[in-house]
Length: 130
View 1: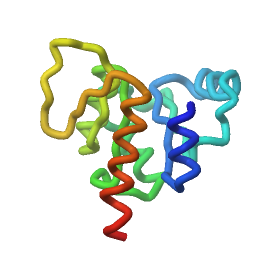
View 2 (view 1 turned 180 degrees about the vertical axis):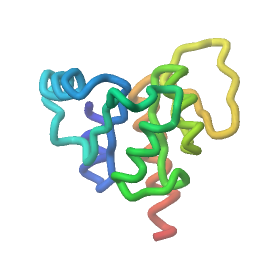
View 3 (view 1 turned 90 degrees about the vertical axis):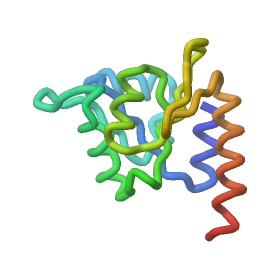
View 4 (view 1 turned 90 degrees about the horizontal axis):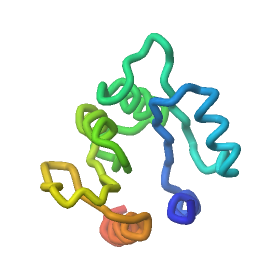
């Protein structure tokens, strides 16, 4: 939560894209007291395919008014990684999978602390370009 809150404070647009139902997603956000951290919450609809189909990520991109090349998805499941890549988003894959082999647009991270480090590097690279 700390890394997400820091990104929010820096003005990063945040979306939660989940294959869970609306009721489960809202319950999760409420239970963890993080309802206000996300600009957009995308949850599975009954008539919509779930992950690994890119539909959920594509809806999130549309709601945030962003292109895939402006987004980094943080995922913890292979279906989520495949969904984000099918939507042409870069991915930080939170996994301890020792058999992981980096592929185009997929980067392995092993902890939220490491995700925070990625975000700091991205801020240093992107900020001078603005």
